[in-house]
Amino acid sequence: MDELETRELRYFVAVAEELHFGRAAARLSIAQPALSKTIQRVESRLKVQLLTRTSRTVALTPAGAALLEHGRHALDAVALALQQARRAGQDQPLRLVMKPGGDANLLSGILSAYAEQPQAHQVDILFSGGTDRTEHLREGRADVGLLYAPFDDLTGLAVETLHVEDRVAVLPHGHRLADRTTVRLDDLADETFPRWRGVAPDQSVVPRGVTTDTGPRSRAQVPEITDVSQLVPLVRIGRVVAILPRSLLTPTPAGIACVPVEDAEPSRIVIARNRDDDRPAVTALISAAVSAVPADAVAAPSRRRPPQTSS
Image (tube, rainbow, N blue to C red; front, side):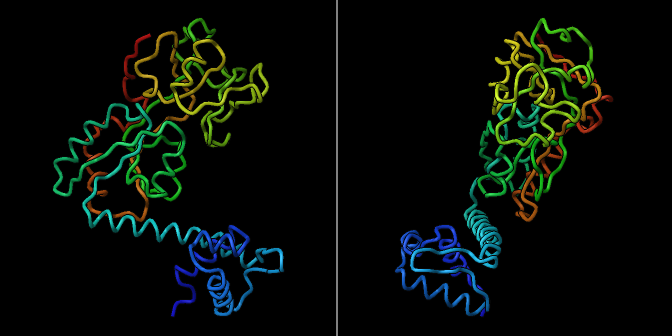
């Protein structure tokens, strides 16, 4: 017999999260005595105490805290494996998550190339305006994603680069730098940048050397935003500036100037999947995406003529 069954692990996690056997039993829809006996059997089998119990309190031991942390991941992995098995057996559509407008006009070509594959499924598009597209993949809510590097956290994902582009300073018309052909990061050091909800300051939303703590406003007054549609009006009225991949501002909105930042790290659009998801339909979609992209799309931005934008 395995040292710990999935059912037993689920029972333990419920107790560890509730720290109350009665509430955990109600959550699991089982009798409290049965739950208590199950936890006792698990501790006996593992030869370690997971919980300390008094008449009024339940607390985790260090061993229990460790099992809770890793047990959650194990249950998530089991749930994802079951979900993918069901999807594979039922020939369900694939789900592709992306930021609205975050495909640099590549999506139609990708879907056309994929439709020609013998393993092709229907592809449903999920739009996420926030910063949780990678969580869609890790939690099984999406099968494939179009992500931006280095903005999105690609840990644990298999990725293929589809498009490399420069980054531009997003400035209001009339800004001191708006008429420049290029700028450098040092030119923006005293500007105020927005905070992006759900993204830590060290995740390259602002290139190294420029931080959201600069500028005339205190950090408490810096606007927090989730997508470009919220950014544009703030830039237009002069509240903030930003540095973004060029394609997110193509065509350029009225009242905005986009000036290339010559020393900012290029941005990449990648197609991503869970590293352990090797279903034929998913790998076929990835392969079709790579084959559909023009050869110069993954060249360094300096080797390509930048796309024309309108002001």
